[in-house]
Amino acid sequence: MRRTVLHWRLVAILLLAGTLAVPPASAQRTVTWRAHPGDAHGFDAFALAEAVDRAAALPPLTSLLVARGDTTVAEVYLNGMTARRGANLKSASKSVLSALTGIAIAEGTLESVRQPIGPFFPRLLADAPRKQRITIRHLLTQQAGLESTSFGNYGAWVSSNDWVADALGRPMVARPGGEMIYSTGNTHLLGAVLAEATGQSLRSFAQKQLFDPLGVRIRSWQQSPTGRYFGGNNLALTPQGMLRFGQLYLNQGTVNGERVLPSDWIDRSWGTYVRSTYNNHQYGYLWFTHTFGGERVAFAWGYGGQYIFVVPRLNLVVVFTSSLRNRPRGSNDHNEQLLRLLANHIIPAARGNTSPAAGTDPVVLRLRSAAHP
Image: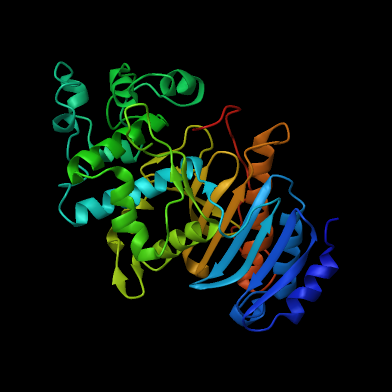
């Protein structure tokens, strides 16, 4: 039985410092609110409660986490999800690859984003001088020029025996640095570059250099037939782990005073280099940016409704995870509902009022009907 808006508002009013766990209405629904009353952190508590109620009404949604800075204001698990269970980030994993690239450059393992990928694949690119000149930056901005392995090509690509060889063997359909061609093959190549440069598996490098400082454990990560970890897809973290990753960016690359990621890398990652060809959002180094609810938002996005939103001006991080099973027809509708929830309810609640900000952009998506793995 779905909880009513009134019930959530009463819960919001009764919150005390610490944790208040609300008994589940059924075995499938568990809700936890953490930390202080929402309005103690500048939230409109009633508006936040209504946002949670609306979230609970979305069947595919499995978690919603909202944090002001390092303080979790709302933490909600639905449909069998728990705090300890890993969620498949799908293509939100690409933003993790971006962070790992910044770390590798900062420690000198990689030279710069202008570094060509040719030397990392001497055998596969021996007779392909044009492909040898593809740079790390081209992979980060989805401007490699290679035919995409995503959308209609995805199934054939992941059915191949060697995902790196298949991605590099695809024809050049644009010049490197030209139009954006979204392709998980690009990020898998980037993951292979990181593994070759560091002398570690992608998972080991990510765990040690990124997630250990965050106190986060990788739950699972798919491997290719050759044993490489899937660069840019099918990484699993808990929703709290996703939140901490977003908070790292909100805190300009530091955690507990320790520098994990260069602050200038975050600025560069959230720059605008191209526009997405399938939703018109701005694209940086494997991060999307867009205006929601009058605020500039950077976000990691994975198929099916996996999101990490960072709203710097409001000191806000929001995480959504969603089920990849038993989805209603038209998964794009679910994405639109989540973006409207962010723009029309969560951001106004974080602002401390429910009135729209000047310059609010309507949530308009131009999503391709196919997935974007």
